[in-house]
Amino acid sequence: MRIPRIVIAGATSGVGKTSITCAIIHSLQKHGFSVQPFKVGPDYIDPGYLSSISKHETYNLDAWLMGENQLLNSFISNSKSNISVIEGVMGYYDGYNGNSNYASTHHIASLTKSPVILILDASKTSRSIAATALGFIKFHKNSRIVGIILNKIGSKKHEILCKTALEKTKLPIIGTIPKDPSLTMSSRYLGLISTLDNKTLKKQIEKISKIISEYIDINQIINIAKNSSKLSKKSKPSTKKTKTTIAVALDTSFNFYYQDNLEALRREGANLKFFSPVKDKKIPKCDGLYIGGGFPEILGNTLSKNQTMKKSIMKLSEDNLPIYAECGGLMYLTKSILSDNKKYKMIGIFDAETKMTKKMMLNYTKGKIISKNPISEKLHRFQGHEFHYSQLDSVSSDSKFAYSLDVGQGIVKQRDGLIQDNTLASYGHLYFDSSDYAKIFVKNCIKYSKS
Image (cartoon, rainbow, N blue to C red; front, side, top):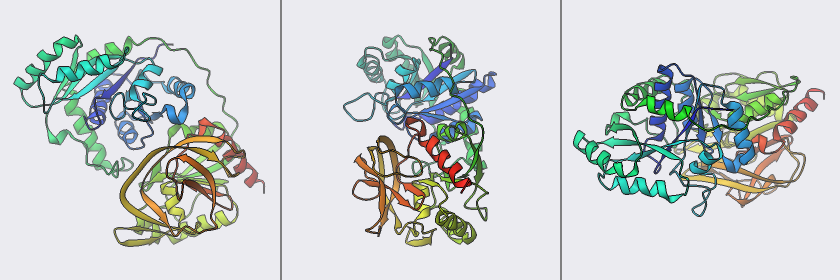
């Protein structure tokens, strides 16, 4: 099958990938195309920006979490729009580690057989930019790079110097974007500004996208995308009849979810009811609860004061409701969150306290599931991802853990996945379709509904 598609890659992090990708999506829509966005890597932040501008949910493409076959299946089955746009991660060839191309943007471009536009920061160079471009083109025998976008051009003279030097690459220059601080997205603590319900940020994204789009040759991008090679058609997984209801926390505090995970739960027969631990007084009537990652420390005071919500979740946990929580969700289920010398009382399902730190913990994780829990009935190996600016203190010595990590930090001493009754909470994030996590979680929810 033919899927018009394009990858937007960067020479390094911070070259403007997200802003430029948003601008390309904006321009494609103005030309009458519907756009399906994808994001390389386990990132939860940039997908929010891409979803905001495209009006379509963004899907992650991460070979480490998903595996190559599942990644390709997800990409093909979710490419339902006129054009699919994939935003890369970090530098183009930066993968799982410094010695490997695995899970890099180039790896995903190769798996999806996609043409690539490379973004170069021209702010502190002129003729030397050609050496950079040629290096990226020749570093791999099939770079898949078919065009270049120059960002942060200082003047018309600067633009001419760069373009002249880049003639050696024999690649088209798809865009030249001027150096302008106002064209940079709001500063993010790796995304502490959520696009969810943030009208000001959404307007900023639209404004920046509109301005940048004027410096991009969208017709060239359309032609490149339409000339993408064919991909083999994949069979779509069947969807089971709805048999249970799972409440999902979704608001400005909890919004880190892989879209594929939510759809996996629906496919296994779950009706998802979204609610806000910030605004609502109690969770909807349900047979299971899923609390994703996010920023509970930002609205810690509000979450702390919502006593009826906290009490309702505590009672459901004590009643053995299947509960699965990740990162921010884990923090919410501890006794308290200490942030900026202020302590906010949380639910207290787990006998531990959360302390915010200035150090970012960002890892792929790998290990074993060592204990039966709400999302897994068998002991097996897994691969995941952790991203947090906090740590758990005063963890009870008799705490029970579900995960033993070979790679990653986890909660304490390479242990992750706290278990209490039928509640599982971890710093690590899992991709449900990498195992039968959704199937088992839904199965346990159905079992609870009949108890």
